Length: 417
Image (cartoon, rainbow, N blue to C red; front, side):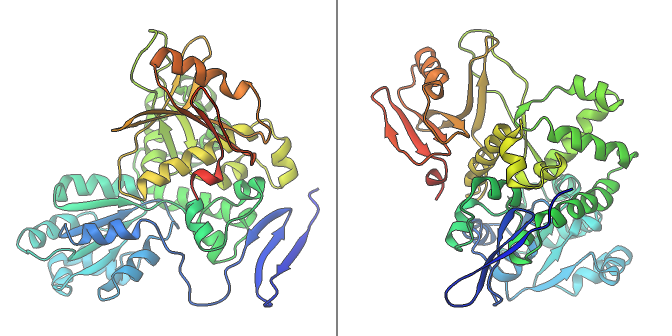
């Protein structure tokens, strides 16, 4: 049985700054009116000055409501989770929208799908920028309705959990990599002081009961939950849908549909294989990553730093931590995700290929703290066949190196903070 341990760390000024529960360190924000500055805010403001409507999508509890209410203080806030508001919008959409002629924030708008068609008429007849701000946590339904009714009329942004840079700027970044992976990056862990061991099971249950249940082609929620747990065991690995079909006992089309739901809900991310073929033997299946490491640890039954340190999948979890930070870097700027991986059938692999306007940058991710010659083997092979001159190793140690063959070695945190 896991021993109970609860420790508190108090700063010299007497404020409680972090606590430790079940061996997992997590930080506590002082009890004041405080919102962690979100990197996406600048892009959100810019789009509101460009488009008549802006939609902020993302997984549940990433802070969408907090952000839009903070940025658009002059707009009336209406949540369609509220039964009264939802009934009004469903029964009399014209009357409902007439109450907000000057604009409003409509939260969880996917709860009233037919409202999008009525919004289209108002938006088309108005010249006002940033009139309506829409948010929703069921991205699958929200994006579907936007594409049907508001395509070309709305600027869309995706709010992800906190980035390492956001936590660092708020002085909330945990020092231990293992603790950071166990805590993850969802806001309630930090601003509501909910230990991840309590928060994660409730989050998964809420996601399945409230979001997945709304999607018609998911009929057996128990099997779907088992499928998510199986996915966690493949975090950081190639996605083999045929294997999942056999293990779960459902057909391939169902697996494809479920993967699509999880991806559009920002629970997982599929890292596509790099498209350029140098030797005709590349792997083309995508790699699967959970957006947040706390969920992976929970689904794998990892509850302490000691357990994580010795877990056979720790390397994959650490790799997922760095990959999702690279994704957040781009999403938080409203930029396209230009990340890929590369692997050939002889076993050579590059964890990340950054394909930008300025060129190609290969990145290797290593969870070890000591630099090894094995860190450079795949990069040197790639550089030789692709004629790339510079590459990067991101690892858990603190020593920095710039090697003569163009390989830079950096602590992974220093690359983001």
